[in-house]
Image (cartoon, rainbow, N blue to C red; front, side):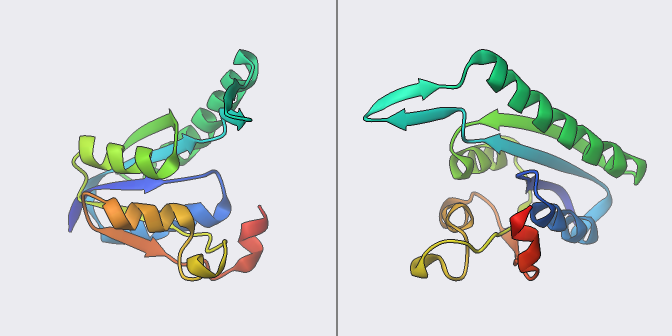
Length: 150
């Protein structure tokens, strides 16, 4: 069984489905690192960075921390070690960086499966993580299209 898994979560019910699979493949005393990446803190307009106001940024970070804390509490009650991370940046880069720096055994993530024809099988973030992951990646497919509207 695996000892340490990274589970990227985007605060959607679909992403949370990855937790069910992670619980099945991790050692009962294993560690789950839950990661939420905020990729919308900087907007680019006409080649210039436009940053969110500090209070809006703080609100997004606090919301993500509270979301992860609730999930983490439930996992701790089940006996798992849990690490909670909120990072800002490009999701695929942050996921890869955290997987490498935390030396995880695998990444377990859901895919929204949205995008153009070239992204028919996996979402763009999932595809990028698969291409450059430092460890195995388990993909949980979107089988319930209703969850993408969360």
